[in-house]
Image 1 (cartoon, rainbow, N blue to C red):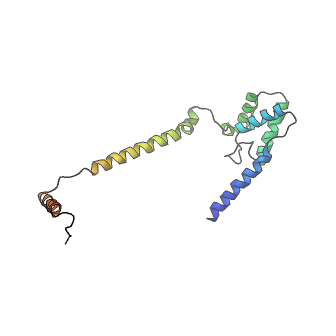
Image 2 (image 1 turned 120 degrees about the horizontal axis):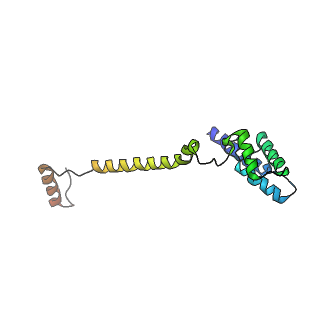
Image 3 (image 1 turned 90 degrees about the horizontal axis):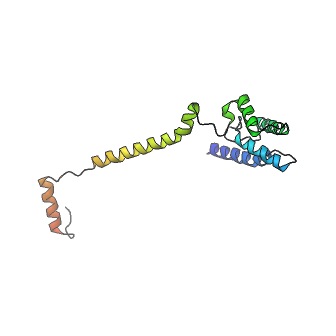
Length: 156
């Protein structure tokens, strides 16, 4: 229970600190562009946040590099390519669809399809096991006696 409380406290701390993580630049258009680029890149320390959301030192440094490269006149593609070249494709928050990332993209769908197939298999197997067997002559006789006795009949 304490572990859950600690985890929740950490998430709330990260969420509260994320408000201060946006880059500050004088030009609102440049600022918006920097934020959009930062949202495309994963924080290599946090891994579940973009560098726009993270306050880790590396994320702050990456946002500073984005601002510097924007000031140098580089395009968004050039900036993203620079980050990928320097940190690898893991820095991309949405990795490209290629052979290396095939399982990453198709994995959830494959898991869902496998789960549905197992569910259908189990339901069909259960249905096959529940097929009613005909009553034996003795069981048929007992049922007819119980029905003939009516609802007032007490069991012995």
